[in-house]
Image (cartoon, rainbow, N blue to C red; front, top):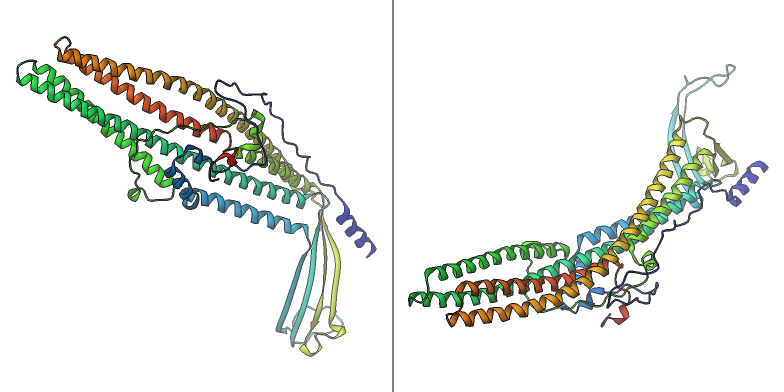
Length: 474
């Protein structure tokens, strides 16, 4: 009995976990981004909530779609269910840290054979029929000397934290995907409006060319050329309408609506991308949910090494039970009916054909996989942010130049039309000028859309909004 108690005390007090100490691996982080005007470093605050970053774009319909997606998106509901599942698994693993209590009862009537094997050759057996009533209470506790249970709990908790980071990442990706599809759709609305204006102009020029041809002032070639330009522009409308329908259907899926009954009315409002605040590169380690998820996956993999190594050592279980057992209910709680037991079981692996070695190797390789994934995630994050910074600066310059090109194209068209009316220039000059203006206007629309997309891309790359208190209504 004394030996059992000493072993129990050792099991409760010992702290001999065999898992390696976990440290997040260092990743070389640059001191600053390569900034181009007008970018300025932000002042990060690790404890600030990310906020409703989409409100920075000042689009009420985008705000409504984002709120709808947060409520009805099936992708988000799946991620939330996985988080609930991981937390429940962590709770289940934590139960192994405590003694397991059980209460049982038995009631039966049985017949014992007279021909059963003898317990003594000097005696005889007889058939009996009797009742059996019992109440039992037992306690079992695994002495976690080697950290198997604690390692399992640590892995489960890290996995739950990973699932929480995954949920945040799903929310971020869902919101940015929705915003990207929405701004693509709005960019096509602007292009379609440009085409509609161009078609109206081309129809008027075609009517003028037809009238002049009827008067004998021009040849049929002028009419045919203008008609060909109009037909080409009308074809582009159908192409853009198909693309718009695809973006609209994608938005429907993201907000949890059937595509056939979902529609967004066209709108040509010009939108200005917000200033996305930047921090230093090392802030990504706190801000990006995918980096947090990758880091927690490493912690879980590290804990699994300890669980695998614990299999080399004895499994020690402490157990005790007490109860009453009697053949009659009247005497069930009498003193002679009392029974109890107290003991310890030890199981030491001796030979398992290399199974434990293989499991340890699997766990160690899993940790290396998790480490590599973490490093890759961090490097990818830095690449995405730098791409967004560089791309935004380049698009700003390109948009300014495209607006100048649009103004020049408008002047060329006006000059060509005036010269054509005066008989100095041909209708082909007007057609070429019309096409040039159309191309310039569409290029401006596309660049406006790309600037919005880069802003969304930067929000995603930086892990979400950083200063929600600056957003009106947040």
